[in-house]
Length: 191
Image (cartoon, rainbow, N blue to C red; front, top):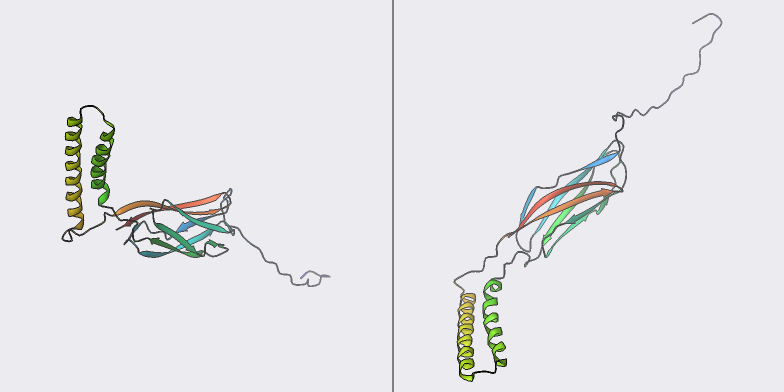
């Protein structure tokens, strides 16, 4: 200590050191989204998602799904998160209806009998040559009813079980906050 000087008071201060790169903007990442999901028709799957803040990000993040197959839905619990200094989590629940993957077996064969019957009824307006008209109507009726009975026999045959074909869709999970947006894709197969 120098001659003629006295001790000064002790002082303290808190400093925040931001280790971000120059020009880095606050943002977030989305993780935990499964790449591939297989659910049974009428099934449900739950997956944990994490929003991790970057460069001091601390805003509300909203979540949504798009690209779901018919009869499917998604829900987030909670539907919004606010990561502050730590990551925030939410649960994604994918739900399918019992008929969302059903491949109606009557669709491909059911149109042929309808077409034959439509042709049959359209001929009733034909006024020339009554004998030829009757012959054409009779042939169309036999073809239509033969097709109907052939299809219905296959549809009612319990020895041929109905197995729906799996349906695959690309579902996009979107996390957004203002102009910031992160997306992840799930390949969802419903069987």
